[in-house]
Amino acid sequence: MSYRILVIDDEEMLLHNVQAYLEKEGYQIRMALDGPSGLSAARTFKPDLIVLDIMLPGMDGLEVLRRIRKETDVYVIMLTAKTDEIDKVIGLNLGADDYMTKPFSPRELTARIKAILRRGRGTEQEQVPLNFKHVRIDPNTRQVSRDHQPVDLTPIEYDILHTLAQNHRRVLSREQLIEKVWGYDYYGDERVVDVHIGRLRKKIEDDPTNPNLIITVRAAGYRFQDEVE
Image (spheres, rainbow, N blue to C red):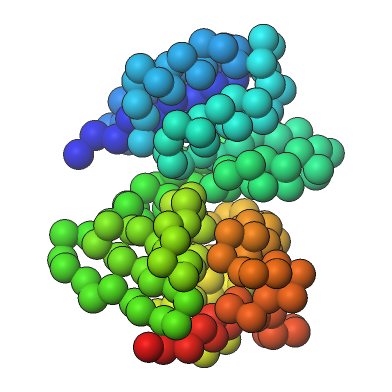
């Protein structure tokens, strides 16, 4: 299968370097130099993954991401400047799956893309749904409900929740979650886990500030502890 990758960045040299590297890996590549054309390409090209710079002319990357997330759960890797820590957090809170800091090597970007796409969105083998008192997770459709109400999760949020639920009441460290969700060859910051857990809690907890489904175990990691039906 040839995956489709959309790269949105206003640096033409970077675009061409990334394009050359990714095409060698067999990916179909589409490029865009500004926000509006990137958003349009996302709608017409229907990529499997988008590499999206934050600083774009016409419409910044965060606004592009907001609009993309209203329409699709496509994987998104944000590109940020080294000092833009707040932009990283905002991007993850808006639904980005991962981020990379400029400058970066095309080899590292390719490894990150492979790690994300390797997970896929599902599996051909039928799996048994996970049923708890409040949460139901169907691995075959990747659908989640809380108290019989559907919950809209990004791919990464789903994968984190499913991984925690599969290890019910067992504490998983950030390193273990990254290994299981992002893959062995993940090069990024472990704190990305905390941001996604925060988003997940807002969607499935009654009170995200006092969670009773996803528990933080100090200096150890996270535990899913909904009651089994």
